[in-house]
Length: 112
Image (cartoon, rainbow, N blue to C red; front, side, top):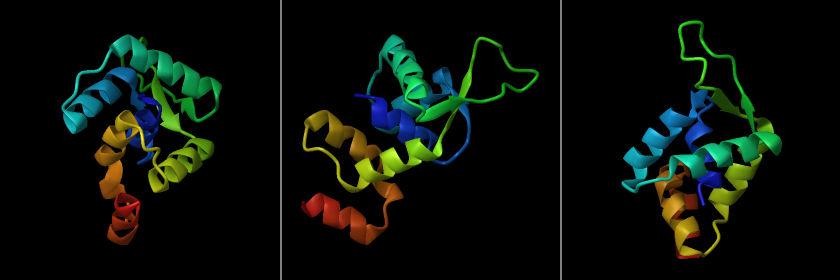
């Protein structure tokens, strides 16, 4: 269930590679994550055109492919953030990004 977490971590528009995303997810959530699942999900999101590979800086490790969120990925994440699904794992991920919503919207979603 890291689909929306990856989109949320990239939502600020900065490109980041899988390892950076994993570290940021662990820091935000306090939960462990299986790196293999995370990298697979990045590949799936790229296939679905929700994220796109970005240029690697010249001095960067060529094995670390940075990703950038696409306009479609932004729309998908924003829609999910406004209407999270009631499953526990979706709610757990939603709380990581709840601060991205204006206070009124955040309270509306929490009340629902």
